[in-house]
Length: 231
Image (cartoon, rainbow, N blue to C red):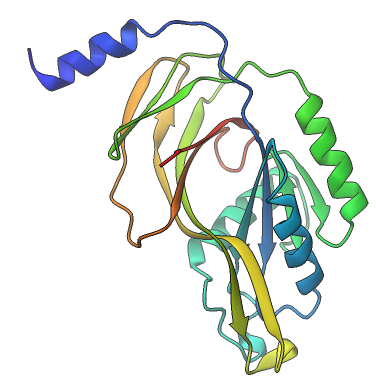
């Protein structure tokens, strides 16, 4: 029997029991050249250690004109933030901004508001699709409810270390910026419409990165499920 057929049979036989509750996804949009972002970076680093929370840092490039080229920024990170801005009907992107589970946002320095949003997301009822990693090169998303328009499956890879960057120009000149869980790669794996489906995982570009798969509504929609590959 061909490999594709075996995979299809496995997916069709997937039990439909409730999946484990996924962590709350907290996404910080920041920049090394942003003079007001350091405190938000520090708070995100502490939040990253909390059980039941997956906190990620995205460096954006739209402050590079101030004199410092962000060493971790990529255009696709700013595009992800713009999708949230459009979905949440905000006027424009800004830093530091925190997005919680894809559907709530707060100013990154307003930690009490971020805490409130994280608590609310953790307490909210969920019926997430199960996500299973099969080796290093495949991930399976199980069945589940999905809104009209379907959902998207995203691959995110991040550096779990706290990374120090000495900034030599711009608003943070002479400062050392510390960032944790810095996203180094993001890629859309495909669409998901509520039925079990397998997706191919590309090889990581760098060693030591953690792999996350996120299922969420299209174009910056609500996060439905999150899974971190254990090894």
